[in-house]
Image (cartoon, rainbow, N blue to C red; front, top):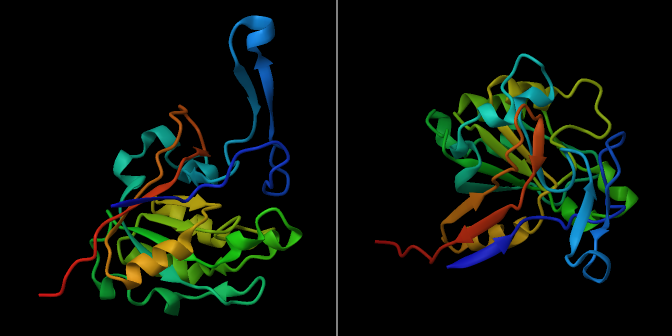
Length: 225
């Protein structure tokens, strides 16, 4: 069994979605002055590797604490969407293998590997590929209720109306963004190793989302019978 960290570090000045609160972290208490070390944190609910609740885009949709915990952990399928041009759409064809047209994938987490995490901390990070509205609708139709991506958003940055968010959130799905390390999961998946992912958020009542420590548990290769 292998554990793979899928999270970016939370640190002062880290990349955030345009308009979101900037991240600042520094000592609030110190051993020398106060007898203990305590950090002061200033960040937004969408900072770093995080999950979106449906409430993120619509006041009438469920908040983070209203969602079942199984939205945030479970078996994962990784879709290889690497090698695309900046700001390229990822269409429904990329997800045709998910479920083969059969619903019932509510417990499956679909991770979209664009390779864009390699641009973390650069201006190019905002030029990531994104899911089309049709791709999001296909995933919802197949029963998927948790979708993650190794990019700033499942929609373009900036986005006019967040179409992929609206489709996914409208189905009460969870969206995880700013993942990293998905290339390692693609290699494990190609080797026939099962993957389980945990992206449990902070317990924030009434929240639109929260940072997570996303971790994948990669099992042993399953032998063919």
